[in-house]
Image 1 (tube, helix red, strand yellow):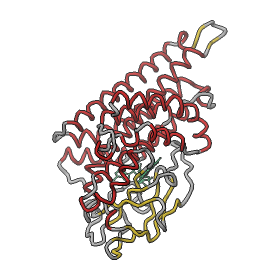
Image 2 (tube, helix red, strand yellow):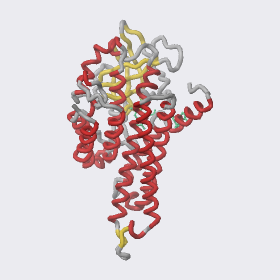
Image 3 (cartoon, helix red, strand yellow):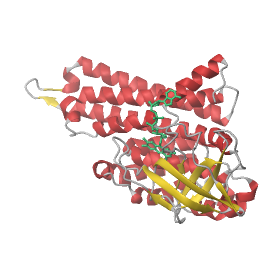
Image 4 (spheres, protein in one colour):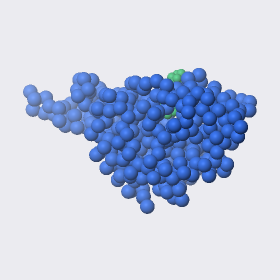
Amino acid sequence: MLTHDAAVLKAREIASSVLAPSAGQNDSAGRFSTEAVQSLGESGLLGLLLPVDVGGAGLGPHTFADVTATLAEADASVAMAYVMHICATATISAARSGATHAVAPVLHEIAAGRHLSTLAFSEAGSRSHFWAPLSRAQRNGDGVHISANKSWVTSAGHAQSYVVSALAPEGAGPTDSTLYLVAAGTRGLSVAGPWDGLGLRANASAPVALNDCNVPVDFQLTDDGAGFHAMLNVVLPLFNLGTSAVALGLCRAAVTGTASHLKNAKFEHLGQSLGESLPNLRAQLATMQIDADGLSARIDDLIEHLETPSEMTMLRVLETKAAAGEVAIAVTSTAMRVCGGAAFSKHLSIERLFRDAHAGAVMAPTGDVLREFIGKSLLGIPLF
Ligand SMILES: Cc1cc2nc3c(=O)[nH]c(=O)nc-3n(C[C@H](O)[C@H](O)[C@H](O)COP(=O)(O)OP(=O)(O)OC[C@H]3O[C@@H](n4cnc5c(N)ncnc54)[C@H](O)[C@@H]3O)c2cc1C
């Protein structure tokens, strides 16, 4: 049985032996690390949150956050693919009763470490407003046909399945969506372009096209029109926690990398290291540490809310991702300044952290949208 401590230890081992040695090269080449996914599978981490009765570890948000931050410290691309997988598996695991029989083998395969899943929500037409897909499922006997242009899907072409959103066949409003589980080999599903991002370059977040994909009724994960509810209540808390943990891992890596540079880079003419010589650099390093620890405390608070929900929990879910995106950008930007030319000329991994940190604020719900939701909810204005 995988315990919290054992899971974090396994994440540490994978981070140091599999992720760290190749993170730089995979970033440069935009190469998805299949060996990272294999290690996560073999260690039982792909089934981290799945119930014990399907072979999962039955662990919770605390372990998910610690494992994710540990992976992100070594390679945020892998950590983000892991976050999307955990969100997708939670959605599959929460499937409506009519789908539980059909998805059981998928859950067993995930728990056995042989199946990677992901979320395919965002569409080219509604952009970051993932809650409003433009695609609409069409009835096809008992099941549906789906055609959709999914704009960015992490692990595209590497996942064994996709949790896909589409408007319900008879849905009346823009958020009346349904979620479906679509196997990677489904006829009509294809990776529709390359992924060449500024950051998170090694996580294959490419567009995916669905052309008349046939989805049997057994693989309809939510009731008709209940996709929006699952997005907000199943996916959003885990996604916001996971992206915040990725941000924390990036901050920790930036602090470690900067401290190491300040210790090792020398002013030979002064006979001192940079850190010994310059108090302004020491002060900036201290600010980075304060910000990273502040984010860590915020994440701990969110975990407590998710473990013991109250009426404030959704506010914390929104606040934490908004804050995490800003903190990661601030900490890695400071690291770029402190490490100067060595960072700018890519002699250190700091510039990869800086680029990766910018993805969190762009990924939906974006930092702007989160602030919009928080502001509206404080004023009692409906969010949608
Ligand atoms: C690395 C990466 C991986 C991704 N992986 C996935 C995935 O696996 N699955 C998936 O479904 N999607 C994924 N996405 C898509 C992502 O979640 C967003 O949908 C996408 O980045 C939105 O980009 P956009 O510029 O088209 O957004 P736009 O909607 O065009 O936003 C442009 C700007 O407008 C702001 N804005 C938009 N709406 C509002 C508003 N209401 N109020 C205030 N400001 C607003 C935004 O904050 C942003 O600054 C991924 C994206 C990235 C970058």
